[in-house]
Image (cartoon, rainbow, N blue to C red; front, top):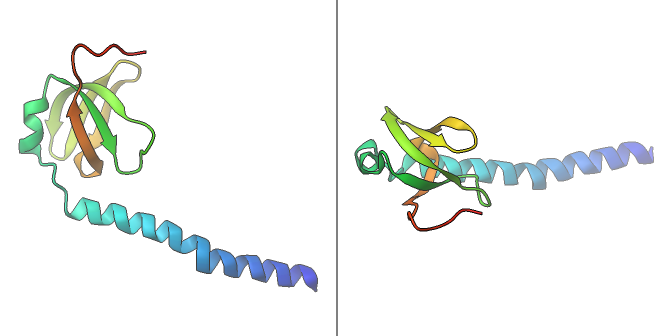
Length: 105
């Protein structure tokens, strides 16, 4: 009987405490997508330049590469390690040009 009580306890904890955290993350991402400040017209000035890109869910990692093209809502980036990457513009939170004089580790 004790096992059933513990199982019910953990299911309730998951439903009321852990599940809302995942829903909150989704809502924040959805809100950012609705009020997207990055438009294709603004990003066209970065074509051919090496840029540092931060996405919605990437807090510790950045994408570093040269922007080659913008098609609809997709940004095509050529990175040194992975080759070509496609990123949806709706998920970009920060974009900055990488200085030419900075050396990578």
